[in-house]
Length: 213
Image 1 (cartoon, rainbow, N blue to C red):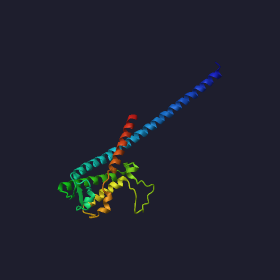
Image 2: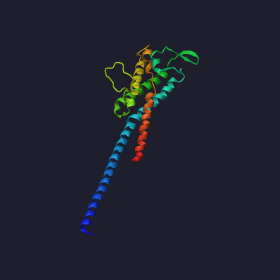
Image 3: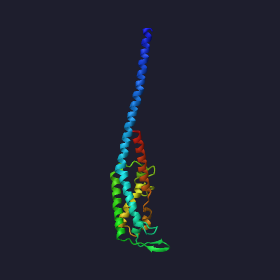
Image 4: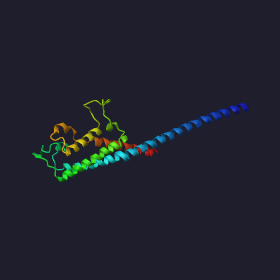
């Protein structure tokens, strides 16, 4: 074979080899970048679960259990907030009209619920940066004018914190006889459900990332 053919083949081979090496290097670097991104995301999720979602779900579980004890034996229409606003109100229960009187055990349970709710508020404030779900943290309106005196459609977090504060003020004796004004702020489990759903979604994502890594 003539030398010029050998030189041409060598050049082609070198070019092909360089091309293959370039492709392999590209995919290798791409895999490294993707691996780094997955590791960073995994650490981010672990931080959110360990420092916010895990603790807040534990607090919510405790308050739910205490609330179930508090309302046991009371009328189905009993709402803690509205009761505190007007303890003299009446309820329909088993075909009769009754009033409710909280005994000392009830009051102690309620104090504990309020104490835990304060811890939830502190956690929300301290770990606000770990909440990455707009359903929890943001209003659903596309725009919000801070001068708006009649805000609409607050987030589930806003509703929950508002209830915690109103309940605390009512327990301390505030807002007496203003049931109609504050009745719409009785507790909704939407916040609990949204937090738990988000925690489960993060856990599922973490499991998938761990399998890939």
